[in-house]
Image 1: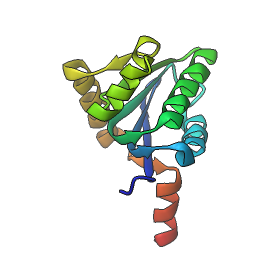
Image 2: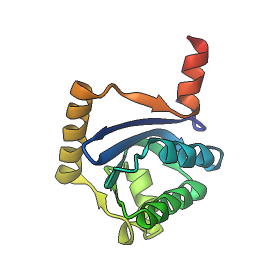
Image 3: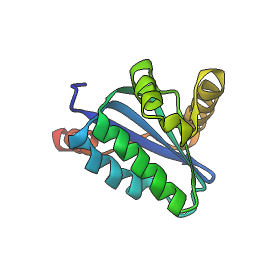
Image 4: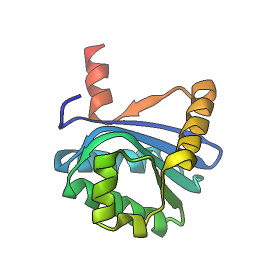
Length: 141
């Protein structure tokens, strides 16, 4: 996956929407992420969980987009949780003090959430990629 690529996979369990990001969240991908989140989050979702364990890089625009998503979730009366950011992403989130505004689950608690959601998703909901990465795959098929 190149540094400009962002893969977005989404599925849900009950009233939770799980969005897994992989690759790089940079300025050129911010609009894609915003549109994809708006498209995949259902009006019935109470909690949105964004898995960051496969996000390799985020720039300042990407951090700003994550804060904008949080603001939108608050306006819509939804909880937002970030799960398992890698070291580089987590370091930037702490530097920007995002961890003081948005819950970030790491360690055993974060891994438990990831495992539970991925187990349910693999049994009930097929993974579905959205965004430019998925569109490229569809065109190639």
